[in-house]
Length: 262
Length: 277
Image 1 (spheres, rainbow over the protein chains, first blue to last red):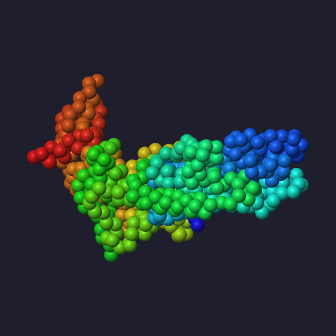
Image 2 (image 1 turned 90 degrees about the horizontal axis):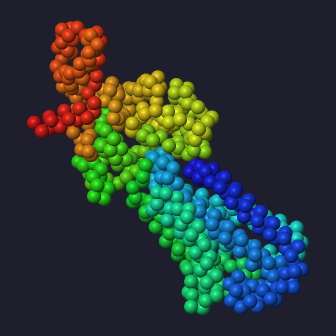
Image 3 (image 1 turned 90 degrees about the vertical axis):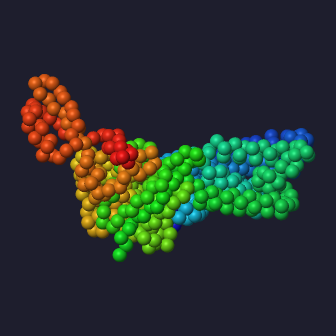
């Protein structure tokens, strides 16, 4: 618990900056719906019939003419990217920040085993993600309440559950990368997030690249998929669970063996 | 009663093909201040980092507290470590760092921490990022000593400390050892080892040159003597007794004179030559 509190305090500023930024963007963009809903109603059919472009962002499944559809495509897109970047960045810096900041000699000579340090650090990241999501969902719900139109709150929660799993997957993958690096891998973290996001777009557009949908977590955490109530293959969730488990075990094994730089 | 607090046997550490230390063997006993003397890159920190489990030794053995504790994590609870760099979390306040170190050991160290902070004049309410190297060293001293450890491992502890704090620091070390702790003090300052240690090991290029009592190590030491006479400066090495040196100086009748410790390099050369004989 001491380590958990310590890690949460260390990451508090970062958490507040990211959650308030992403939350406020989602809040503001949801409120924007009131001023654009009439024009969106006029062009919704056109957006839905742009062939592959519409499929790439899910406009073939939901309509921009409804708040559900607007949220599923516009807000979920912004939230997904912001949350993905935050998750991967905190994962990629968690372990390596000690060596980069030359604090490893202090932390790892306190009476904690390396497994204990890895466990509490990982748990602090999960707590960080939970707080981040609660704040962002709070802003979204506030905006939807202010807009005061029909909205599927149960689908919003389903989307956020899947988005949370996507964030945990990205965070754990980057946590693994952090375990064998003595410098913060922020660039790699952002790169991986954008790559997965691009993979999601590509696999929806190009049938030859369809298999990419099993690699990128953005595929199952799709706002359009959830709000159109498309059936989700269990394989996506199983793959996500395997990636999380393997990355975590890999990080633990590497941290148990490796030499720490001063 | 545990006698051997540190026992290292044939410790070897290679970084790929590059040798860090080779065949390092030494023991540190309860109540003693053991000096570990060597230049930069000689292997002092590598030995210490192997001891503390920060890096894995390539081969060899290290035993702490005669194997009294089940594992290294338990042993760390009884060790106070002061790293050479003394780095902490920049955004944290000094008092929070000290409290975090204490809580990690699940002991109430508040009284001892307060005593140490007063003695060393630690700026408790400042953030780490606003501290000088000397003040960071003071925080490191408090973190290493506040839980009254059985073993102190100090890696070049005095760099950045002013003479007054240095003196108080060594006072604290002697006090801890008088109470039964052992101290493993790494330094590249010969006089520091000479004045504060009971025994010492000299390490060069990853290998131990010698281990002996300070008395024996310094007995045969050459002194560098500089004399000033009628505006002329003259230097020579003196290897004999102090009486001989005083007699020689009396003959020379200098205006001023200076007797210095040999440099580390000269001391190393001395032990190299002895080894070659």
